[in-house]
Image 1 (cartoon, rainbow, N blue to C red):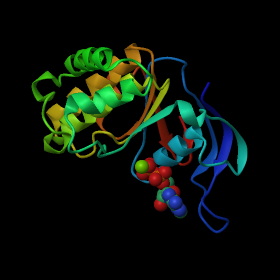
Image 2: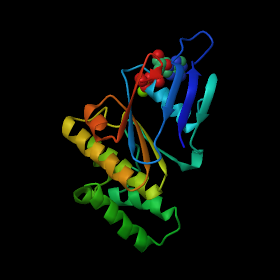
Image 3: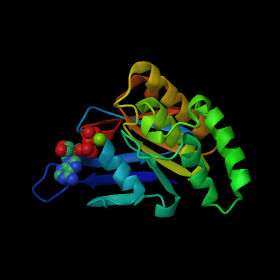
Length: 202
Ligand SMILES: Nc1ncnc2c1ncn2[C@@H]1O[C@H](COP(=O)(O)OP(=O)(O)O)[C@@H](O)[C@H]1O
Ligand SMILES: [Mg+2]
């Protein structure tokens, strides 16, 4: 269970409070959007939920490190390897055979709309394709929790919609997806939306 209970947070004794008694309960399934203007503390909240930031006051129920996946504005891949390879490496890490990994990677590529570029090197993919590949890889990795920090910030509207849809697909497959965003189309795809302003959720 991911939650903040009356959390106060600032980056240093002389800094302004970023969170001022924030309460947040992330539902145990589905896709959640954390929205708020730039500087409102969305990335800070992800850091607290992931457990790499500690509150000054209040309590946080954070995720265990090994269970967490991340997607940032621009995902990093093995650039000289193909789309399929980038998905398959995560599957091979679970100890399944090459053949099974390949078949499963093809299934995931299809699910996330990457079949046409499955043999392309990752460094040749568009921003939207890379982000969808990151979502496919997260499913392959089977992280029960995926934190996404502005995953559509560098994308145009149509790619943003594809990525938002992919995140929803992943959430439906059982991953808890927590997205910090100020993108309306991500917000609309979410099962729940929490708005952050003046250091609290409302
Ligand atoms: N590492 C840091 N050190 C000091 N201040 C920071 C740091 N990271 C963020 N801040 C400040 O904390 C506030 C919230 O930042 P952030 O969580 O990144 O907001 P958002 O993700 O909503 O844009 C901002 O005022 C920002 O300048
Ligand atoms: Mg941020």
